[in-house]
Image 1 (tube, rainbow, N blue to C red):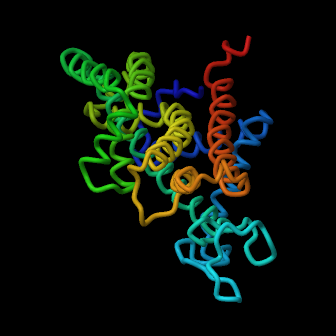
Image 2 (image 1 turned 180 degrees about the horizontal axis):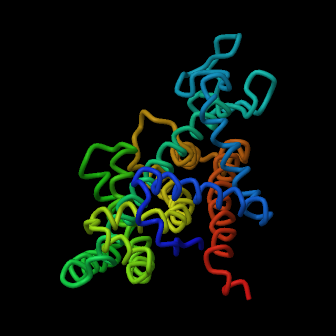
Length: 308
């Protein structure tokens, strides 16, 4: 992992330091993708899903929640894939292909939003705990222990059931419980960095603790934050799909979990309608595996000893 050891970092402008840290992390991500074929595959999968989500409005052929009828004015129920309905229709007469495309957008919104929240909370907590230590560190780590001890899926289900069923409540539940893992790793890294020469040089020049923390140390832990963000995206999408499959998700938003729950409730498996429930299942598997591939490539760069 690149670390700033040059004492001139302490004299640099704050904005440039942060931008250099972000640039280093993004450059590291691209470097990892070039060197590791698994990371390249994971990044390609993410990019493909992102493009589908961005252009979803232009890719769908029908309104995903619209009840459709055939040319003979019969309900388009349980139709197999054909030229008009590329993945067939549901028991209620809705287009499966359009639901799959719009479900991609819902999945990425939940996954990326939750990942940003998880990493932001974990990074800030890890920075503060690792730098200030003492009672601040003890209080924050005990709070992390409490969060780790709470059953993850039941907590998110209760939160989604207690509040209005929506994707944002699922994001809140994920953010409240997933941050401790990244916070602990970043805390350990900060405890090492705070003793380095460039931090001591910053103190000598009169920089305050918050300036040292967020300007000189934070850019050096952003790579770890990106690593945990790639993992959190898959976790968030998997959790949202589980919540929707169990019936606690929003009924007015199409997601991959919503499609699986609808297929299960309509007994699609018993009728052999594989074109209904297999595509969303494969999409969930693909995006979770993509996060695993990217994190695997990152680990080899951040922790090269693990490769040996």
